[in-house]
Length: 136
Image (tube, rainbow, N blue to C red; front, side):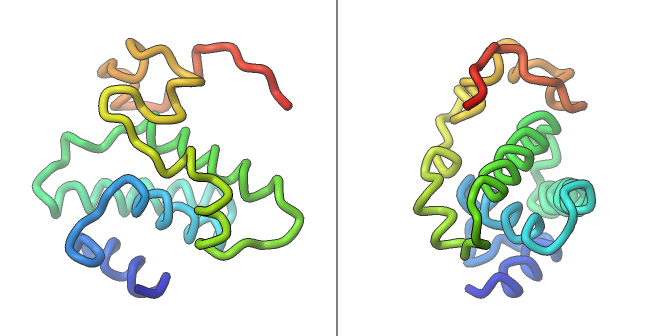
């Protein structure tokens, strides 16, 4: 599917291609971040994801901290390269962002305590990372 088709399906609450997994979330976020400022992309993606969750009958699955944290990680990775990447190039260079380990938060386990990510507060609002990490 093209970027435009994926965004259209997602924004209409339909699962692009019949399913919508973690890597698909990352791709949609990448598309938004390629088209909009980080704050506009964050607002658009969060709103669309909440509508999508409701349309899929799973509004309880929306998680503010996970959504924001992944968006910021994607943006950071996009900014670390000198030339604009296609989705395929970005995905190949950032496999760690595409992996989701249920209950572990994927890469977010490097930034957050499990108790933090599984809290009601983290689901409702963005919480800052609570694990220390070295910046390279």
